[in-house]
Structure formats: C-alpha cells, structure tokens
Length: 256
Image (cartoon, rainbow, N blue to C red):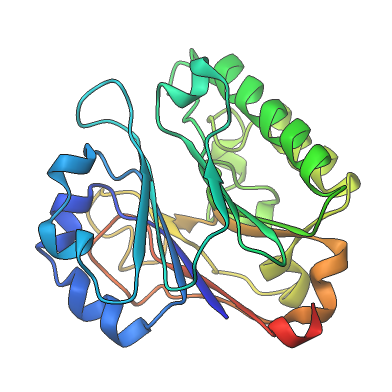
C-alpha cells in the first residue's frame, strides 16, 4: 500500500496546476490532503468522481480556511473527526479505520508569528496524542499531515535564526519528544537519520525553494508495531504546485 500526504495550499489552486496528472502518475492507494481551503461543494467535480476512489473531507466553518481531505482506493470501514468542536470547527482531522490500522490525516495549527496561537496549537497536539493513545490499544496507528513543527536542527535550513520562531519553539519540539516517548516513530528520520536538506516546506520568498532553504514539517508517524511492515518513506521535493511537497509511506500489508 502506498500512502501519500500533501499540504496542497488550496485544492482549487492545485487542481489548476496539473493535480490530476500528478495523481494518475503517483498512483497512491490513499491520498491525504491538508489545507484544502474549500467546502465539499467547492471541490473540483472530477475529484468527486475519480474511478475506484472514495472521497472524505472535513471543512472549516470559516470559508477558504484550513480543511483536510482523503482519497482512498480501499473501502474505509469508518471515518470520524476528532470529536472536539474547538478543533473540528477548523476542519483539522480525519480519523480512518483502514481495517488493519487506523490512519489520521491532520493539519496542525500554525502558532502565528506573534505566537498568539501557540497555546491553541499545543492543545490540539495534546488532543491528538490522547486520541492515539486510545486507538493504539485496538490496532496499529499511522498519523500523517502538516505538523507545522520542525523537530530537530537537521529538519530546517536555519535553526539558529529560527529558535524563537513558531514551528521551532522549544515547547513545540518538546511535544514531539513526548510523542516519540509514547511509542510513535518518525519513520522518515528513523530510516534516514543523517540526511540533511530533506525538507517538505519552503517559504514563498524569492529563491527559498531554489536554494532549498526549507523546513521538514510534514510527517508520517507510526506505532512501533507497524515497523516490520514499513518498506520505505520518501519526500518528493521535486513535485511543485504548493509551498509544501508530497511525502510517501510504503507498507507491506502482508506483514500486518
């Protein structure tokens, strides 16, 4: 099974930039999208009617803001939100029962330049951690999406100058430490412990992407019991159309 996650920075925008052509070539079994910025009625009609795929979405109350969506080739047994109005009103989470595992598609909040939303972000982080602690007692768990935090200095181009920037604040990174201590595995970094320059987001400032001045803030985390089934984890930095790039997780379902 191939799972791809991508913050598309607007589903209507990415659709006009060759999304369907990319989707056909990439051929994921499950595609998790973040920051869709659209109600279900605003999704391109061709996405609603992709052969052999079912579409699930969670939208924000605020128009043109946040939102996540999942396209699945496999029949999902169940799909729920976080069941917390504070976060569900911003369309940040879809929780899928995929049969052999749970899959969470999440768009974590941005703490904002003035740090005004850092408390909200951390509350969301704790709610996700609590939800996963319940789910993993039943079956393995995969969580993917835009976490809006770079964990280690190796995960961004300029760690020293960003130590007081949301997305690399010590308190945000500490949550990642706790998440891993709870048994969650950052699969890309585990498979590529020394790889530098592996980023998933770049500022829109001129030259940032061309010079690879970026951050790794999009992740696949898995519970430890899934490790024997993991084949590979990749970052597709060459795929354009958004300020983020797609990330991929490949699983051998026979080993689950």
